[in-house]
Length: 88
Image (cartoon, rainbow, N blue to C red; front, side, top):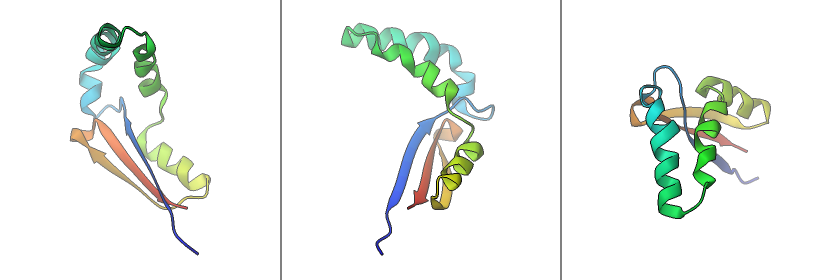
């Protein structure tokens, strides 16, 4: 059987992440700038998406519960984002 790898890259608001300290920027500047540059309000979902995503270890547990094996979490950008890896 062939092994397939599933990856996910996600930024988060964890208390030890850089984004935690720049919440105002992501809540206000990024959506405004995205809307200005693209003439679309699609960037308004970004802060909601980041806030709703579970903490790293909780998401890794969800991956295991879904049947992924060899799940690992790699913090990137001083903990502002995480790369999640699991094998199917």
